Image 1 (cartoon, one colour):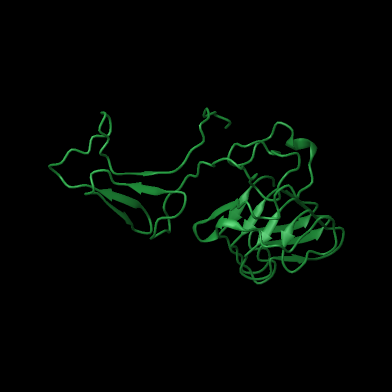
Image 2 (image 1 turned 180 degrees about the vertical axis):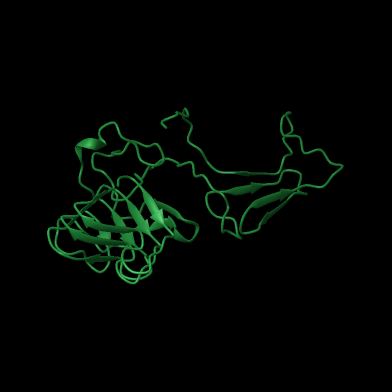
Length: 218
């Protein structure tokens, strides 16, 4: 499993999201907000390899081990991971865990703290950024970019507007309601809210975007 974000899962016994029985590999994953009595984030058994991954804020033990031959390297969790190299207990400092925004903020110690791997050459993170941006890979599924990331959002379960969105209301008569499942913009009838001509009076949600070409890297 590589370059994935896994959250909101549960198990009645082992491994809220990942239960490696033997010889599984987890690389550059972010494993957050999962639930299980034992190993809520990850349970690693014989000959398991976990590297460059964040296992944090799970409901129950973030990790559990069994058997022998498992390794954790260049990963973040608490309590401290058993042995290994380059591990940390530091809080990842996500942008907004409550709204499932697991980008690292600029203060995170996980930036440029991972171990480069051969597969990363020509690979991209979940935002379409190069998997290695500043010489050394970040821990987790995202590379931190000093520029502006474009963030998708289904506005669930927010009931207040989250960063990076701004509600623009040029005519002063629009309304924004976050219902917990949708963002709903309303405008009254009888007044122009033209989106296409020179006077853009449309009420809208916007976020900053880099002054760059958009590329399809799917």
